Length: 83
Image (tube, rainbow, N blue to C red; front, side, top):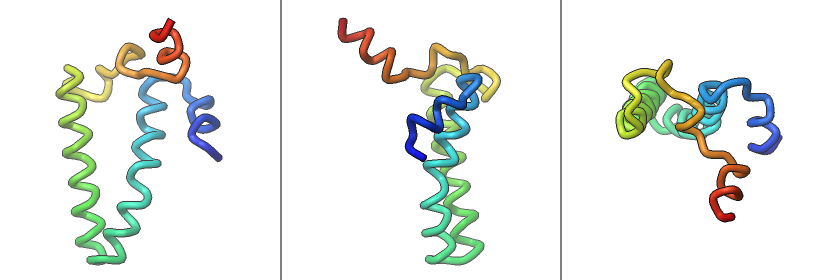
């Protein structure tokens, strides 16, 4: 399944962001597990959480429920901005 197929199933912007987070977290968690067991996994999850909170703050979103369609840019949006 490629990223495009995954996004097609998104019902809301939060769905899309959650799917992206799962894609971005999977490999680092495996690396953390291999490198340092449970402690490595906990550290990776903590780092991802911190990065997500930082990104939400940069977007002006105090919480996940504050993420709206205007915070998500799709390939279609990119094409329209080029016109």
